[in-house]
Length: 447
Length: 149
Image 1 (cartoon, rainbow over the protein chains, first blue to last red):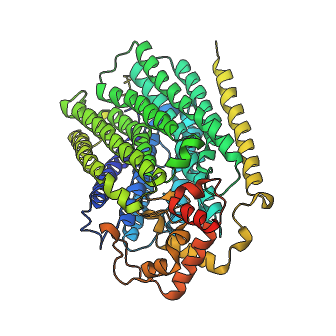
Image 2 (image 1 turned 90 degrees about the vertical axis):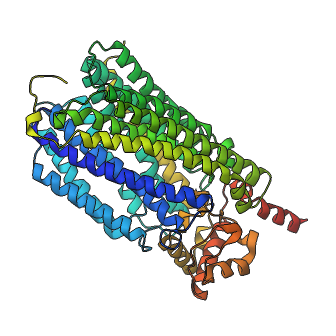
Image 3 (image 1 turned 135 degrees about the vertical axis):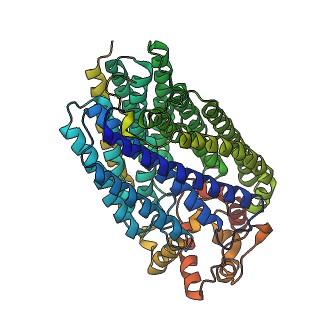
């Protein structure tokens, strides 16, 4: 750690870990409900559990991105963060909004729009919170000694993410138009600007971990984010095939979303090649595992599994089935969860001064969570494909099909248990690092 | 070999061009002449139904236009499939509707609220979904085919 103010990142990461645990708890509630064990139905019905599960994911990832920015930007800009106290205020207000939203979901207080369930009143607080965050980051960059491409791409991703929240707040009488602009937020976040954030964090980690020249890494970063937007913006069309808008989206969405895996392929090739090319062997092997792992798993989860149901001819049958859940789990895990866990694994020893590189708990956490998540993805996939055939081809009733595929949710729960064990071990490792301290300041080394 | 400057030009150029095309297509497909939803048919009851749909996060379990929670049935063609009476019974039920062992929250809607939701489903059911309307609810399709015969 080179600047004292980078320590603020630790608390954002700790908050992320707390929410991640809660997210898993609600995931289990849903998994059990799907095999008929819905004893909590009166207090936490499925729609509550689902809203909590997905919103906690979004908030813990955003908190992780914010932590990453608070860690990375001072180092890239070569100065202390502007207004450190405000960064703590921002964290507390983020936590307050998050808690209010999650509690509200248990009392039927929500907007009921998939992924954007946060009630309108809280939306304004989210906006204020994000503006404060961006203000601190932009002021630090502006006053900084240098403006690197890595910092610019990361910041651009965060600024665009904030701007794209606005279309989701527009009111419409038509369900179709409502859905149309909801995807401006959800799709353009996860298959657009969040990839800029991921790319920025990935570039920073590769520079630190492999020692490859910054100019080389940042050149390829431009190519990757270029491919992301080139395919991802018009790729939004794959959400518009069958919701009641013009057929032109079948063509545009089909072509451009078929190109979307290219950006993830480039990301994976980039990470692996930089690792091979690098002469510096950073001792923090766990961070390297998560970094390279994120690039590879995101290609499989977001790229390949996304492609598996993105063509209009396939999507006609898979739209609105568990096939989507299959893709979503591995995609979010690979692209966003793993990159946040990577930056945490990298920065934690630097902030706390405890160089617990390469611990056996840390390694086990990586493998258990990844194998568990792959197993979950397969379980969702088998259930989804069975659902498509039985319900859509053989015209069986929805609930009859659900009973047929419920065995796959037993497998899902078993794999999720393995996954959760990995996450608990990761958090145990996090806890063992202790608290951040000024004694961990290290102005000389380039680690 | 590609320079950093060229790479940046590729990023900025590609982004601006595709975003402009995206905006153009959005304006085109939401224009009146391209309407597939019978937008004029959105009555006050339909709007009230949509608000009820959102306030109770029905999408958290059900799917509509193929979007939602995959835990409960797709409701796009539900009126064709189940008929108004059945749906009203479900909506107004004071105890959890419990088909095949999977519980629905007992909303106990009033008659007026149920009428609004039915109006909403009726409007949704009339949307041209580029072919998905037939796939999503094969039973409805059979029923329609039988009627036309």
